[in-house]
Length: 364
Length: 138
Image (cartoon, rainbow over all chains, first blue to last red):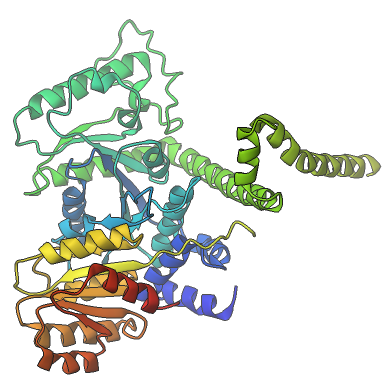
């Protein structure tokens, strides 16, 4: 790490907001030296509660996050918020608009809001988000809230960075078949029916409740499979299959909270449920497992990124992927042959290493 | 490691300060900046200078574009510049002003540290070009 980065790290640990902002920019930009910087951060992390908030566009996430931050501030805790917005697949540009709705906490520097766009590929966003969480954690934030649009796989990756995931479901978001579909609802530790003052909110709550109970019986939804609610459908309730996205979060039944984010109604109950979930994670040992899974994913993602970069370099050496694609188009070769061709030397190398390692262990 | 390919993007805060309630122009600029491949954070209407400074610092923007139609630029802009200075962000933030700003006020704003003033009739391309050329290298 060079001296600039060292002083940046010192300033961050000393609580300078600009240093935190700078470090997050370095992370986003993949500036040279950012890896060393992040790896230094790890020693100072582990104290923040990380909360993920997701749900469809317009569900009221930003407004709820704002109220949540306000409530935590009233309790004397500091808050970091990472608000994620999509970026254009064509220009890479983005309008990051979630800040607008965070009005209750403006002027309070102890609420640090950072907007991030989905730049980069191949797990780039989730890596950057996870690293930005590290920066805020090391800075000393008590609560870190990640807010994302719940449109796809990307978001599921991101919420894995969080200890507790809340999924916002606005009233009238489809019939009960929607709640049976795979995807975003499965990742919820807590359901929030926001805009609960609107027509249809009761029905949405009811549908979610049915879904959660169904999940308890079959052990598929929300990592449920637990003991309360509609207990004992014949005692044969087996929670063995309940290892959804969240790992062995077995006997947690996702509660359903009703909120009206614009007025702050229900926010306290939401906070209580977040605290209950947190306590559950700690008591059951699920948190340790979660953290382990998360680090495993981080290691994998970093490895993938590096291998990907090596392969890109290899492709560039061979004249770039465009030429190869053109050769396929002309019918001279096919993608499978090219891949075999490109990877052969890599495999050979790895094979050599393995032999060396094997030989070394044999001679010992 | 080779995968540290830098992926820098120009980050801009498009800000509306004070009481003026028209942000059509700010929306147009935000959209045009997005299409130019920038990352744009829009402040929303009726922000105080402090709020703008907070957003600029936290978001670590390269460019701060302030749109003012109300004529209050002489009071609001210096407050923003002082706030940026306080956080050590004044020197490497490219500050632009746009909207209705009389010619006789321009020198004063430039002295405050505003890099360029884009009045009515400025083409969006011109603004984008200016940002591309002058966005600070960090």
